[in-house]
Amino acid sequence: MQLSWAVRTDPGLRRSSNEDSYCTRPDLGLFIVADGMGGHVAGEVASRLAVETVQTFIAETAGADKNRTWPFPFEPTVSLEGNRLKAAFRLANRQIANAMADSADLRGMATTASAVLAGPKSACVGHVGDSRVYALRSGTLAQVTDDHSWVEEQVRAGTMSASAARQHPWRNVVTRALSGGGDPEIDTVELTPLPGERYLICSDGLSGVVPHEEIARMLGESDGGLDGICERLIAAANEAGGPDNITVLVLEVDAG
Image (cartoon, rainbow, N blue to C red):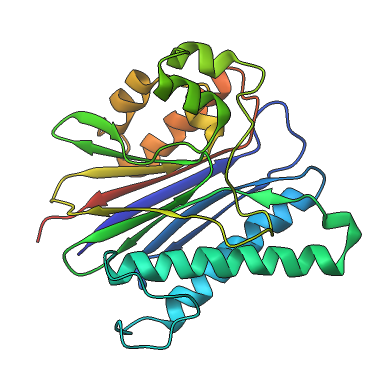
């Protein structure tokens, strides 16, 4: 599968540092965004550790099959790519635990992570936290991932609107993350991308302030290519107040 991509990250207007991390490894088919939490340098450390650990494990398992010795039980109902992502995320969680054990300054850090791992004809999304993956298909934007956050759980339950969730004081409270505790549950979603489709991986610095309809419109634009889309998404988040770090990674499935 041939993919074109572009990525931009920005601290936003209210943060002095950027605790987001990302990885673009088209040679591995791996694209990931992680949003660190913990304040000061801790969030940055957590997201960087997660991205580095996932990248390393995906590289080490390139060309592997289900008969390999896996660090966690292989789940037969999940694709090979899905098992690779689940194992990589759980190893990242353990690396975060090790780092906190070595340094009291890092205790309490955590990170979200959302990744796309593309194979020859299919792809898999791995996800934990409230960073998101979107798919733009035939002009329609769909959210591929479910946020692991308190406000999104209320939205899914029908007790809060999406617009109210963007303004709620608990909007940044995540219910699942890579935080160094027990092995986390990792969501996976299997995809069959088609030529012309676009995918967006982003931190909640974008999705938390820019409405779904605006993201759909900008993701479908052609001016300036994928780089231009990234720039406009970042600008929209900052125009909406830029309360958090913003990372946007756009993928397009190439024909042929």
